[in-house]
Length: 222
Image (cartoon, rainbow, N blue to C red; front, side, top):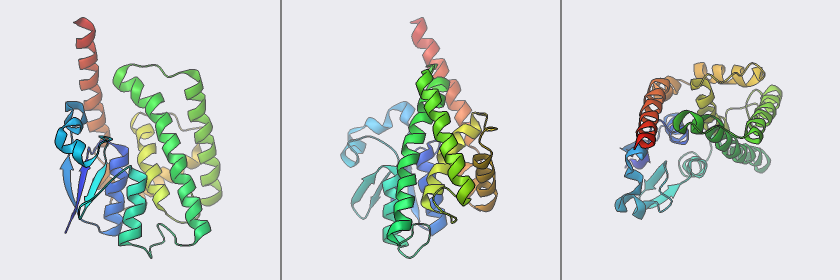
């Protein structure tokens, strides 16, 4: 029986869940939610997820949101022996640490990149500096490991791969972070499902940017 997955495919956290699903051969019944049209605020969806966020899964009646928790749950239930979420407590702790780091990184990407593109909001200097500092740390960690948590692919890589894809789409200058760029390019080529899930993201992303800017301009003219 497939797992219901409520998602917006443009969303990096949603794409992280889709990529793990492909990696573990988990079948999803995809239920698209258009955030720009407010579909995440309907009474039906709020019954499933009162936090009204995507991705959200419902697995045999069990509802769960927050993408990183979903990644952990899917591994624990459907692939407990997989190295992608190692059983060794120390190795797992390193993966969990980087999942938490990714949450902070994506928050900065949203504030520095996404908010500016979609809403014309200029990021504060401290947010820009924090993003650079986090990318410097990520660059150092990848340089030591080849992956974000260890020398092996993990769900932390998959989660962060989706987050960093926003920087790639927005043509953010990664020249100061060569390990990050090399890691992204390598996984993009190595993961057979990457293009299927992320291949049209730039086109979709920019179309949503245009819609958002149009709505913003119309609101200012009212």
